[in-house]
Amino acid sequence: MEKYFEILKNTPQYEIAHKLFHYKDKWISPEVQADLKESLGFDPDKKVLMWPYRLEVNNVPASELRDQFCANRTRSGRIQAKKKSPINKAFLEVVKKHNLEYYETFDLVVSLGNGTKELFRVFDVFYPINDGFRYITQTKVNLDDEVLDFLRACDYLKEIDPEEMLKLRIAQETV
Image (tube, rainbow, N blue to C red):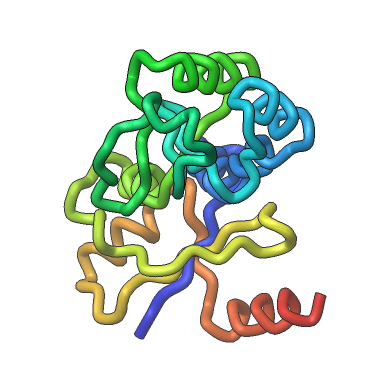
């Protein structure tokens, strides 16, 4: 049976969870979108990947910009700007100006495991509750007692019984 753990506030793990679910807010802010549009010369809405290391787009926005992008798509199907192209440099300036970041679930899983590699595949689902100010993790089914004991001993996790989790999810859906 799955187990549920709340990530406690005022812990590094909570900070990472919060960033994971909210880092995109900064990227889509009107100020950042306006700066990207001005710097890149096209509307970034739904075209620019929120990746602060190199400009990636779904499609080259205009034929006059084609020479600033790589010819081949990445494995994810996107097109990267050439590293030294003016458009990539302009993109990186906007990233730096607004201190834009990127987080992925891997960052949170590693922090929850507190560096313990064996816990990498323990957590299955993350639930942002109350507009993302409370984070609940769901473990995979059939964890051995040693792993559960480790999780219960973590000072940044609090176990929640399934009934309480169900109530939280129902309350979340009715908001």
